[in-house]
Length: 66
Image (cartoon, rainbow, N blue to C red; front, side):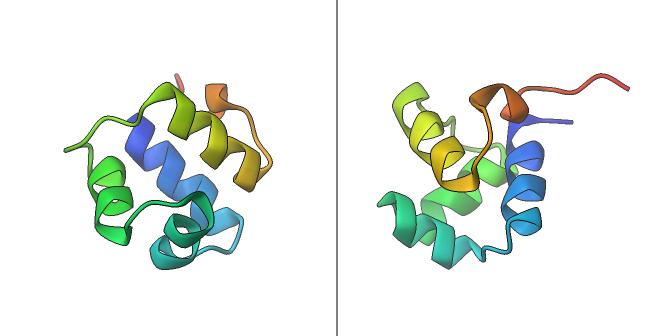
């Protein structure tokens, strides 16, 4: 899976909409949607903020094997 798909799965598991999570971390919903689709790369500082909000590690966004 891609970083964007992993992020999307974690966001949904935490009960956030794209709009809700984007607002919490200070970005636009469209930017979050682009990150989840893989058309925009998430920066390390933003990944840290998002991971903190989702109560996970940035390593959880990385590709998972099997």
